[in-house]
Amino acid sequence: MQQISPAQLAAWLADEHKSAPLLLDVREPWEFEFCHIEGSMPMPMASVPARIGELDPDRETVVICHHGGRSAQVCMFLARQGHGRVINLAGGVAGWAAQVDPRMPQY
Image (cartoon, rainbow, N blue to C red; front, side, top):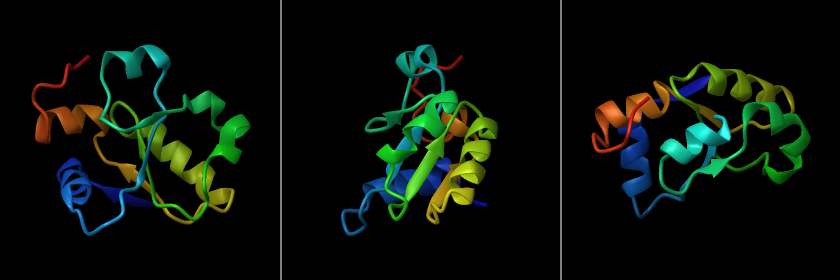
């Protein structure tokens, strides 16, 4: 499974010459409301199988959760379903807050 660090993701998102990935946040709604990376799409982990049709299997997709565990599971699921360009955000939003955006609320 491919992984990306928060700093690498921040650089990717800031690069005007690269197309931005889909940021798929698989945390629960209350977690997403508390904090999220701007531009991310909420899709709780349990709803991914039913909503997989909303995702483009050919688009680069960075999957996000709190620390990286749930997102890793979703990455593996999506890969098994033919999504070849899924990337796990190592450290999740907690890592993002620690390495990229210290103003982001943490829980």
